[in-house]
Structures are given as C-alpha cells and as structure tokens.
Length: 320
Image (tube, rainbow, N blue to C red; front, top):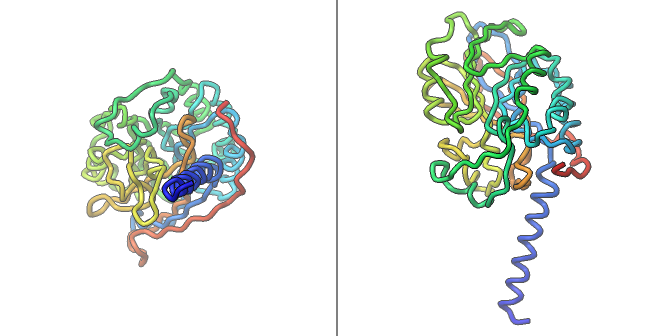
C-alpha cells in the first residue's frame, strides 16, 4: 500500500472510531450540569431549579429512564421541562417512568415540535444548515395530549400561553410560557405585559430560544428564560464550541447559563436525547441541569457552572 493509501486508511479508522464513540458511548454519558445564577429579587431566599429538556424518549431507552428518575434524589424546589419529550408513538409510558418521581415535585412545562410530531429519516447534514434554509419535515402525530393529561394530573402546570403565580420554598414566582417558536406556534401577545411587581422570580419558558422571543421576555422585565431545543449543538468542536443551534440563537449560547440584554438571564439545556435517526453526540454529553438561583445582591459572578457524570453509561438502547 502506498503512503496516500495508508493516510486514507488511518483517517478512516479515526473517523470510524469517533463515530462509534459518539453513537455508542457519549450519547448515553448522562451528565448533571450545575449552575448558579443571581436572578432573584434581593429579598428572596435561594431556589433550586432542575431543568430537564429534550428527552426524545423511545420505549426501550431504559438507562435514560432510570437516570432521569434518579434526579428526584436532588430534591429540587421546582422542575422545569422545556419540551421534546417524545420520539415514538408509544413513548408516553416510558417518558412518565422517567419523570415519575419528579412529578411529585412542583413543576411547569411547555411542549416542543417533537412532542407533536415524530422523527423522520433525513440527511443528517441538513442539521448543519442555517435554520432559515431548512424545510421542516413532520413525521406522524404523537400522543402529546396523553402526556399533558398525565403531567397535569400529577400537579405540573402547563405554561403554554398561560400565566401562573405560585410560591415555592418562600419564593413568589410568576411563570409564563409559549408554544414552540420553532414551528412558529408562539403567540407572545397572549402573555404580553409586565409580570406582577411583587414576584421575586419572573420566569419565562420556551422550547426554542429564538431571539425574537427572548427580546419580548426581556422587554417585559423577566428575570430568567429557560429553553431547550439546541441539543447544545449536539456536535461540538473542542476550542470552538457548537457548530449550530438549529435556530436563530448564536452558537455561543447553545448550552448553559448566559445573559440576554442588560438584566435577563438565559439558560439553554443541551438536553438528554437525540433523534433516533441521528443518535450521535460529540463533546456534548446528554445533560440535565440543577440551577441554584440566588438574589441579585449576592456577591457572585453572573453565572458559574460545573458538570459531572452521575451514572455509568447503562445498557444498550434501541429505537424500539
């Protein structure tokens, strides 16, 4: 074999090894990310919020179900689910097994496009194109109404185009949310206006963190917006970061805690799943995040983060 042939062979071997790692290992490298954000009113006590997003659950993803259910051991004050729970028409029982113990905690949720429509095979390279240049392809309708009924029956609040006022662990919280901006289902005019002045946390929730939506929340005076959808880029290049966000958000905010404007905090979850037809993550393990929210007067950096693996990779998972 000549030198050129050896180079091609070695390059192919490295690429194959990377694909194997991304598909077989990293996508089940369940990770708890922790972040601190000073976004509460100055007179509020700290609040622990668990952010769960983008499960993309299929029935046989047993290690994911076990790992998510164990997050209840963190004893969060509030759970926020920012959508894309389903990836299969029979996945509602699996999603509920995963979230079961968390449903005993106070929680709010909205849905994403992949709660409404199932995944379809498509060229993975389309994911790297700018969002505006991709044509959305919907799969079969998914039983999101069944999932919604089960979550609300257990006490979680559907924030889709709704306002909710609640008090948790001594913190007065005002929550408002949107239907998925990725499908242009958002109607901000239904929740527009300044939140109550006595709310110690003004929280917005959306699936896709589109800048036009974030601008509206910031203009109305929200303290924090939580979102998912981006998968953290799903494929990240060390030293460069996310290649894409699959929306109009800049790639530097593809995951984690950041700010939007002068006052509002933003947290984007990299999520816990992938499409069954693109089961690959690289330098971007699946995650849930435990946020510790502190008063704005706290002498801390604007955000601080760390991440750690909470569980082994688990058993093999299939699409069905």
